[in-house]
Amino acid sequence: MFNDLDPLLHSQLRLAVMSLLISVQSAEFTFLKEKTNSTAGNLSVQLDKLQEAGYITIEKTFKGKKPLTTCKITTAGMKAFETYVDTLKQYINKPL
Amino acid sequence: MKTESENLSAQQSLEIITSMIAQAQGKFQKNVFYFLLWGWVVAIANIGMYTLIKLNYPYPYVAWAITIPAWIWSMYHGFRQSRDRSPSTHFDVVSGALWIGFGVVVFTLVAFGGKINYQLNPVILLFSAVPTCASGVILRFRPLIFGGVLFWVFGIVCFLVPYEFQFIAGAVAIVCGYLIPGYLLKSHQPEKHVQ
Image 1 (cartoon, chains in turn purple, orange):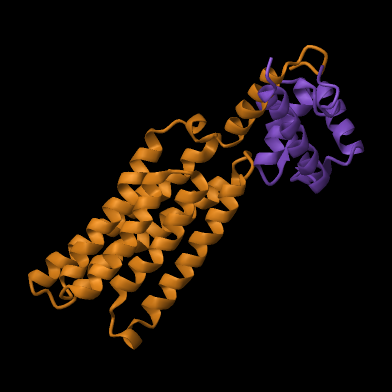
Image 2 (spheres, chains in turn brown, blue):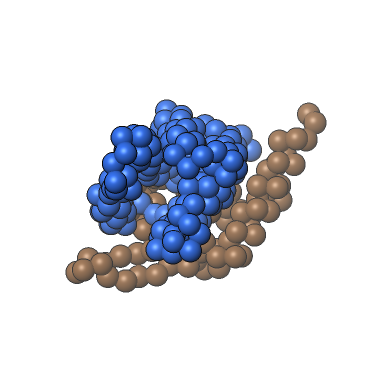
């Protein structure tokens, strides 16, 4: 089941991150951590996977003296997310 | 939150998507501040102007001085919001651009008001229709769309009524166009806007 769904997006945390990022211009690491209720280590690993796939960009800067990690969805990420949602709709609308 | 994909059903996936989008739009209600502030300020200024004209006060436009502290308060509020760590939604960006553009147009109209014989009320009301209606469409919030339409209607009314009654029309328009949708928006939960 769900073989056609993008395995990279078909995971709770990565899907949650992509759903948040599709709604905003960009989001800080702390915002994503808070909204997804995840640990920093787990979130960091999943963000790296999404970045490697080209779905998001991660920018590391400084805000004052504090490090600031900002994530942004890419065009490829938006396309992948749309495809994922379309496939999901097909599964839901599929007659039993 | 887990990362496994094996047991994630289509329904669970959809729930994650809708709940996260709702969370991202959670600061939605913060924008209501501007609708309520400017709704009250402009309504009071319009009624004040009408009252001062009726009282034969030589400088009735002094009623609009109330907008000066409102601008300062708006800028202070905007500055505080920009320091907020929560990210800007696409609506925030589009809405910000629309209202800044509107502010520039209003400033220009006030500065060159003499060129159009100070018939500012109908023109400003007509211009108000655009960002109000657009905000309503983006938010999928009908009262705001109707509010925008009412600005257009009262803009036309202003062209047709005597000068002093333009301010009554302006006050009614702002109550219907900003205040009522503003309070309705305030009473709505963000989740209700996710479709």
